[in-house]
Structure formats: C-alpha cells, structure tokens
Length: 370
Image (cartoon, rainbow, N blue to C red; front, side, top):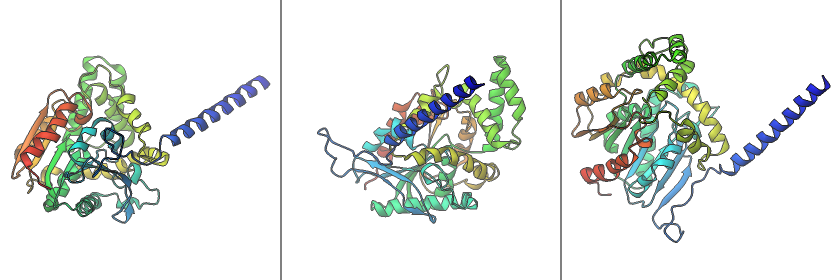
C-alpha cells in the first residue's frame, strides 16, 4: 500500500509539474498581440496596420484582429463559422496573402473565442443581435478607415450571418463573398448524415455505424443531444472527406490545433475560451439556424454575390448551395466551384486558387477605388 501511495504521489507531482511548465510555455507564446508588418529590412512598413483591439460592439467588448500592408486597400471583414468557431488562427496561418490586397479583419463574434465573456447575458446570443453586431462592426471599420463600403466574407455559419446582414444593410458593402454557403441547413444536415452513414456501410465500418445509429437521424437538422451528436457526426464527415478533401486521413492536429496553439494574437484565456465559446454558441444558435431558413428569408440582395463552394462539401451541401445561388436575385453573381475541396476551401487543397479569386478576380471585377 505504501508503494502504491508513493507511486500516486510521484505521478501527481509529475503531472502538476508538466501542467505548470505547459501553461508557462503557452503563456510565453500567447501575448495577445500581433507582429508588425515589415519591409525587407525588418522595419515596420509605412501605411500598414497590424493590431489586436477590443472595441465595444453591442454593449460588450469584442475582439478584432486587423492586418494589412496598406491602409488604402479595401477592408475585408471575415465572418467565421460554427456558430462559435473563430477562424482567425486558420486565416492568419494559411491566408496571409490576403493582407497584400486588403485590410483583413478577423472578428471573434459575440460569445466566441476572444469575445467570450462568462458575464455576457446568454439571451443576447440570438440571430437578430448577431446581425446588429455585424452591422456595428462594419460601420466601425468604415469610420475607422474612412471607407465608403467594405467587403464581407462569410464561411459556413458566417455565410448565413453575412447574407442576413447584407440583406438588411446593403449600403455598407461592396460585395458579399460566401464560402461553404448555408442554404437550407436542416436539409443539408440530413444529407450530411446520410452521406456518412452510406460511407460507413460501404466500408462496413462498424464503429461509425454504431455511433451514427446511436445519435439517430437529424429530424429537421436537430439531434436529441446536439453537442454530443454534432461532434460524432462531424468527426465522420471529416473522416470521409466532407470537410477537408483529398487525403486518406486528415491530420486534425496539423489543420486546426497547431494554428490555434501557436496563435500569438490570443492570450491563454482566449485559447481556453475558444472551447467554451464553441459549446455555448452551438447551444444557443443552432436551433434558430435550423428554423430561420435562409432560402425563405433572403431571396434577393442589392449587392454583387460571390459563392466559393467546394464540390465535395458535406457540411453545407454543394448541391443545395448551387440551387440556392440559382434562385437568389442579385445585381451580379458568380458561383465559383472548387473541384478538389470540400467545406474548408481556404485551408484545404486549393489555397492558391482561393487567393487568386480573392486577390485578382474579385478586385478586377469590382474595380473598387478607395
């Protein structure tokens, strides 16, 4: 018994030491600041902008990470997916080329990542408030950089929020860009479930079949235990190429975890809140997303529309996104297919193509003079 007690004591002590060392290291790489944009001599580039700020939006402080080589360039506001899954770590890791052509603004939405606050009223996590937050952020950026309008890009849940905002406040935007475009999301969730179940049965993957049968079919996009079921279903979507495409086994750690761990723009608290915010946002916003259908609410917008869609997307169905695009009325619209990508277009196999569309095609077609 004494030996067992000693082993437990030593193990506990070692675990505590490892945790202290880990959090000390994590704190050292998490200052909550962003590096300046520099020239070839290492000097801060004149006219560039690089900052992490927390202006008050909708009554609470919300995190904006702003980076661009030239503050005369147009502003690009990035709306992340989820709900509650900030993509700033991924954008800053995979898409730095955007900073050559835009003032890139990554915003952690209310209740997510660096904008998560335990004291925030949970009833403020609703779609109408999120639309108003988006309007406020957009207006803040217009005023701050003395622009007439800005570009807005929404990915997944962000594409829902983006189109809802553009629909209500078109005067703020040059154009809307959607990636992993939400359309009829309840139907998309049902198709996603059927896709992974079919793949699992083709491979006789008993583990996947058992887990999918346990969570059950998503009636109108909803599961009985949303948080647990979504993790299970999305895990198999990732495994079977409906999120990222073209690899036998997606390296989740390399794709997501590494950029988050080493993201200097977050403090340690922000990194911890990243996980908290995902769960709370999903709980509060998923059911409204399933009942307030974009296909019914937004049938016409007054700004040009660009949809960038991976043909293998099984999180926001490519087929449904294409159908929605064809019915959506806009002064100008473009549907750009990414044939070797799924849901994660900006971070998957066709990053160069994504940059070409964003940095060449859209600016050339829009001819924005700031």
